[in-house]
Length: 183
Image (cartoon, rainbow, N blue to C red):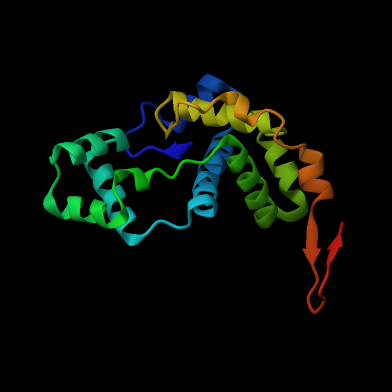
């Protein structure tokens, strides 16, 4: 999954009302974690990538449209130069898999809320990785995210057990010690 550069079809509030399962905060958190997952998999975006992304947002064009315009030579010279410098439009695809996103959500939640991570997510109705998939595909279906042809909601099935991932795997780094203490 990857964030789109075009205007979404509906607001998050409309999507929340239609799905009726998760609050806006859950959707926002999942979106935040997509960026964290992309950075973990691909590294942070370069300044050139960010300039291209800003152009795409201003002009409301998708990555596919950008690719086509690049191939047709129908872009401003400065933008073509930036794209050439980063290795072409395909380098802008910061796709992450469902599994990668699930692990990034776990890691981000643990960093942000520690031992309360599982409870915060449960408060939003997110109690299994399948819930993450439901949120992601609601965003995909409404133009907030794009997916690869090989992406499936099934990619989110049983990625990990929340009790294992949040409770048993949590570790506290003790100051001045070379080891972690398990909780």
